[in-house]
Length: 216
Image (tube, rainbow, N blue to C red):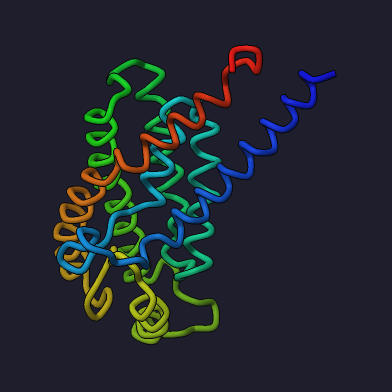
């Protein structure tokens, strides 16, 4: 009788902790404490969380986690461009790296994975801005490109926590890629440095939940 109760308790507790840490990761970029800001950017905590989750899981689970956190980010910022695409790709690639045993699961490897995944996610964001600027996402009501950019810039800039595209917003392809190069490198360095701080507690927690209750 005790084992089923313990298993149910572990299941719900693990789900609660996983959901809460995911939500905290989504809102964490707005917190700018000591050492958490470089050139106006903060660590990409949602991406770090997705990497931590996906390292020990399959690509499908990584994709679901990335889409979920990405949609939550979209709800807090702007749905265009979407964060869900980049985080889904990050989840899939991280899971495949682990599955193919290209890298060992330790702090240094996780930091390197985060560095590379930030560059990939930022590149996908820049590509979306490029498509947006070239009117691929132009409104069906005939809104001009300038009007669309102004509308989206008004949504994006005042509430952007860590700045995928900063400044006055994406007004030209040149400005998009200039911002991409600067922000991708800065965010990658900062995120990789802070990745172990999130990976260590989450990894230990999830591993402890996978053990048999009799072993505890």
